[in-house]
Image (cartoon, rainbow, N blue to C red):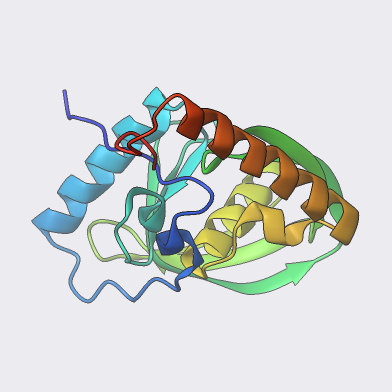
Length: 175
């Protein structure tokens, strides 16, 4: 059993930074991916980008129900159509919104053996890819909302933070 890591949440500046390319796919990257998979399952979630655990590398893991998959240095090379679906995020826990994104995507990247992977998919798996790519590009789900939704979401998140702070006056347990 691998120990899990803390998932960074809204307000943590690491979530707004663009992740850098993985230069060498080695044992350290494989170990990171294993820890990320355990963290994703414990959350529970269907995807997790490395920067959500504070590692600024272009890597994400996901499981759409067929077992865990690791994608290193992913790039969406093509997208098409439109699909609206309710989407949540482990870094914005407990909240979700109807988000419109392209329906079909073509993602390329590498597996842990350094082999190129190429996946053309749509709907749920395509949404996972786009969501995790947003994380790697420093874009949080809240940035996909319209102005009114964003204002309401920030209000809820601010209230949560104040409520936590009132129970933790020294701030030792925040983020």
